[in-house]
Image (cartoon, rainbow, N blue to C red; front, top):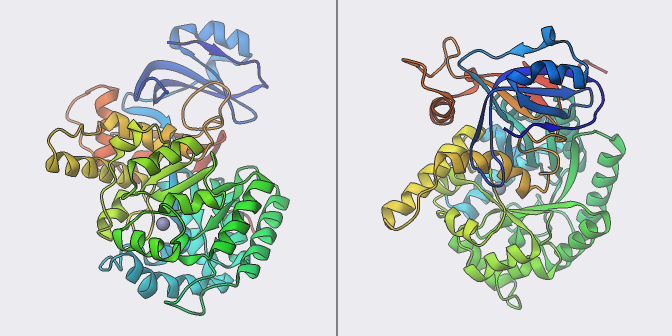
Length: 454
Ligand SMILES: [Zn+2]
């Protein structure tokens, strides 16, 4: 095991036991009887072996009696990263799964999203989605809100209050023939985006950042896309949107932007493909478009529950990885009906198996690879891998304390089977009952603490 040491501030706490995570080289690295220390800034100060306890306690100045020992059926894993979730759609998650994308947006999504000008309604929904995702082990979420600036700012506040790492996007759209009152003018969208960014940054929330969010090309004029590309560039901000989710949508983009070579080219033209861009879906991208993703450093968010639920398509993740495009997983609530990243892990495996059923030559993803996509892959997709994604010294401690044998939990362990089996069982069978504690940047955020009233 690598014994990494980082000169640091004082040690806040030390855990001893099994740690599982991914590295660039290894989809699943298991560290048994390991010692991990977190400093007072919430960063990983050291990772070493149990037998080095005395030495580490002297080097880092902590008492060996203060070390917390994990149980045999427990392990730590990195917090999961939801690279694509619509916080505003959480209110109807689990319903409205009977229409394809464009009809689904007009029938269910836009009428609900237009309600978020009501801040009381927004507060209720946003509080629930942040609490639910934290309970399910989402330490970082990349959220779409709605077109309403004040409600989007409220989502940022709620994520900050509960201690979740979040990227929050005020949605931009100046084209909507389905629900005519739910749109902005290009000028309004630009002005409100600037106000949103300024006000959110002024709050100085340590873990919550704004992300420039054109809904998707069919909802935006070229003029607006160009303005948003410039705003992102001038402020060095993240960008999120959707791409190539279903065939009808790809055709519509062709009609709306006849001058562009491809859907990807539309975003590229307007400077919306950067190494801080994450695009949801990409089910129908061509190899040439994937090349453009790699060249620009833009990433994809794979949202298989949504792709199945809206019958959109099946992304070939193996092909995306072959093109060396960064990829993370997303729940895409409410196109995806589950807000749990464990569900995204399972549906990713299912999607890969569907491709193998269709073509036995297809190389099915392993659970270890999908585990990496849900953690380190997500951090890379959001360009946050210098901060989170695995247990590297110097990164923030974003972690789940998992007990596979939690009392009254969903997993029956007949005998001790070792950490790799424990992880596989948790990923396939586990739920929030197995997640005993959640840490974000070293702070324990689960069990949840309700924010105190101002
Ligand atoms: Zn989406």
